[in-house]
Length: 153
Image 1: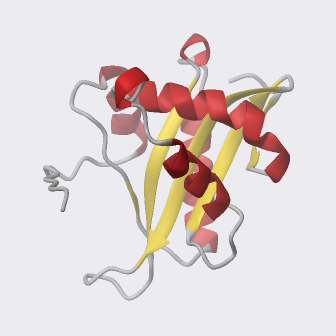
Image 2 (image 1 turned 180 degrees about the horizontal axis):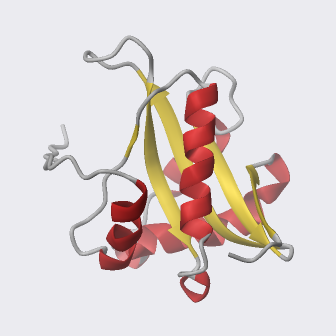
């Protein structure tokens, strides 16, 4: 990993650097062009990072002044734990920067923030076709075998 890599909380002035990463993340999962997220979702997501009553947080990775990665995470209650759990919802690194430890550094910082927030578990999900991501995830976490189901209402 490059020694000039910095992981830090997002700030209001980061929007124009964060947005291309957000768009890249969404495109990776097929949300681009006609299937893009509505602007209102992006706007609301951005505003939640700075709303003190929202349990949603963002970290960014910078390398030599360039924003090269992001992660979004949130805290929520669980019926199987007293303390909150941390859900790492989004993780993205510029494709040209993958394999340099940026994703790992972002995950590690989420672990730190989860501990500071009183959580003892961080979890996330990814698509089965995310082979590169899964190679990293298998090194930094345990796959518990769960399958995710979803239904929009």
